Length: 316
Image (cartoon, rainbow, N blue to C red; front, side, top):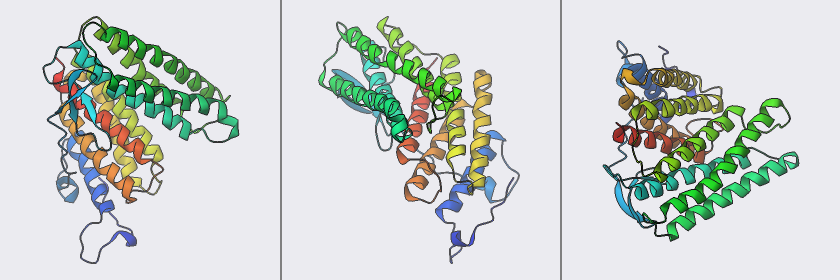
């Protein structure tokens, strides 16, 4: 395990860790306790990120449904109430959550497609961003029930499916070298996979089925958590060498869960990554972590970790 060798600008006169040192120590402890089963001794074994409690869900009425709102940071995370089997409630909560995420996917694409050469695909991304924003506003003005929620879900599907096709097309363009944006092919694939799952979920809810299974929830979200860690690894300043190692080992942890979802440890792993992402988001916002990560992206991936935790708790 690496030891901490603070740079001179990170050392306080009173000997107390700066936030960056705490992040580095805490990050290594995350890997030490969650992935490696605990370190033998020393400050890395003892330090941990502060635990972040995201529930219980606060009640809120949206779109005619009673749903729950979890602490999501910059934006709330909407979920169905615990134990609910109402497809209207699940439809509203899922559309509020995934509609927000897909809207931000479009925003990130636009941010990462600079210049006149990319004006066309950037304009398409901006159009999807506006469309999802308008759709969420329409949902908030609605009052859905068992008689019309399927129709609204179908309007959501009619918006999501072309966006998936756009993501897949952009993935091919970037992968082939025909387009040169700042969006990795893997990021197009990652976001398309999330949208495809959202489509499958709405189709399931249209049949009145609100069930979820750990055998689906854990592999899907573990793959996304692993890719989040990989993205962060490549967006950190190269001088953040220990944090880079933390993200790489965190990716390995979730790849293991993805391959073997029945092995146990998912609840511990997801709480650890929520704590890590929360601390990292603070460090990104205040500049104590050097990176090219936009605070909106840090908040985006944190919300998805919290959603993973909620789905894990309610899945059978």
